[in-house]
Length: 359
Image (cartoon, rainbow, N blue to C red):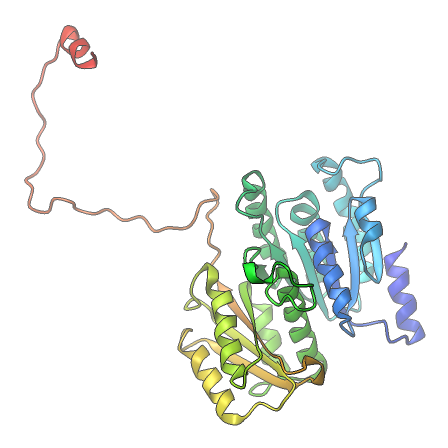
């Protein structure tokens, strides 16, 4: 299927399926996120699946599908992935010519997500689209993929305006038996909530204390970002959902380094002013006082008594150095402050003495 012709046909025909917001899922993890996005039936977002596995691409749910490798190419062949990068870049340059916002969904650690997704993201950004990456890291037991995932993260940070890191370990044991619709803590649901919040904000000007220009500028210089989503069923839903969103966002560290915070509140009832003030006060206590705080709230009858708070923190520090280890500052400590200066001992040990120590 020629993806560029498909979108062009939708645009010229005036169909409602065409949107200036495009979500591209790369590889297994990215297409899984995209499939859940299709289940949510989010309006005004055109979903595109990109993968090297023809079977996975066949069963994926998307508006358009785009294979990047020949069917007989091995899945782990990095050279084949590099050969297809230029071809993908040329196709996407036509595809994303009219897109305003591009979401790049990928799992770091594989060939497609770590190698091809950054190339496409850079092409989208150079085309003028606001490019937002949503990436997942490997699980802790996937140690062989971790170094590849770190390299892929670096490439995504160079290619995208904002890269949102989705934690794969947010799933709570109490939600393992719930169907997807009621499972609120999965990475897929978090990804869907983030995309829906950003897309609805741009489509409906859903900000309460700023204009879209400030929000766009926040995402343009977002760098590495963390996100958290919280849900509540109680009367104090706004505050409770905000605390849960903060807990999920702070799972990998605090938010004091963030330079921008975006808070989106969705409920079936109108948010009272006192609850909104309390919610913003809770968030402001957890962030830098100089950080930009943007928020919006809206009513959605489909929430059916549930209040959802989506929190996005931009400007986070990349936690890994070029060697792949955590960036921990080195410190030299004086363990014996009262000790005298060390002196060289005048010892002359013969060979037989050294052998006796070895024994």
